[in-house]
Length: 153
Image 1 (cartoon, helix red, strand yellow):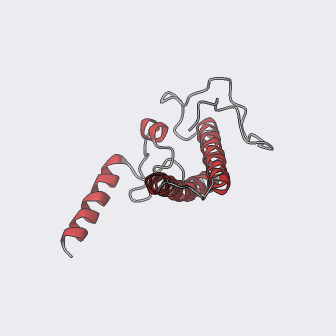
Image 2 (spheres, rainbow, N blue to C red; image 1 turned 60 degrees about the vertical axis):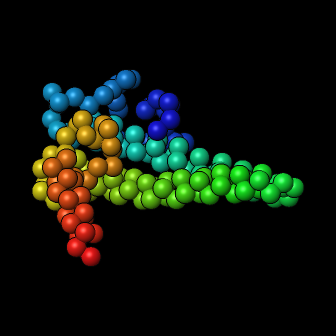
Image 3 (cartoon, rainbow, N blue to C red; image 1 turned 60 degrees about the horizontal axis):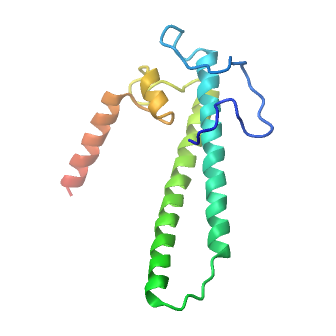
């Protein structure tokens, strides 16, 4: 997410809950109270807007780029840079899908709870990764199963 403030939201955004400036969810509050949900909703919306803007910049830069480069080494360098940039944008595309899913989970009242166990994911984990859908333990079990499936092939 950019360095912009959590209250610097996308144009047209209408908050569902008024948050004080500098608000950060606290463990002292009820878990996933309206303030928590609004805080994470704002973070996710801002993150989505930042990713979309960066993607637009990339597309614009690639379209403006001069294709007629005389030197083969320079052309190879530019192709490598473009390939890396496009891979990054593909990761952003996948991340946007996860952000959309997290926003839907907020709307459905499921945000902050593990998809696998139904337990609280925890504020610290959500602060670090607002798109988390599982507790750390559930995520580790899932990753271990994935690894075992890969090795069993």
